Length: 68
Image 1 (cartoon, rainbow, N blue to C red):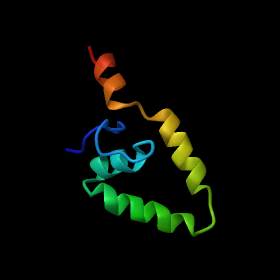
Image 2 (cartoon, rainbow, N blue to C red):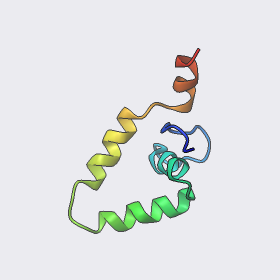
Image 3 (cartoon, rainbow, N blue to C red):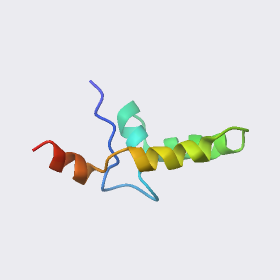
Image 4 (cartoon, one colour):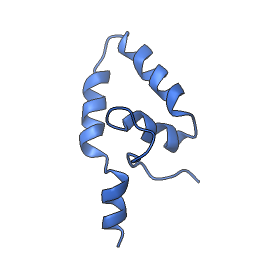
């Protein structure tokens, strides 16, 4: 079973979005970061999607507090 989509407190570089997606899909954060950088070379709203996920995904700390 896949884990929930939250930004981890450890292993993140900027916002933790790639690390969260890597945990969710069972891959390494480095692989997810490479995929993101390569996708930015293609036309599309990848950077805006990253910013939206950074804003919308809860941090591990806040998700743990809400589960109480």
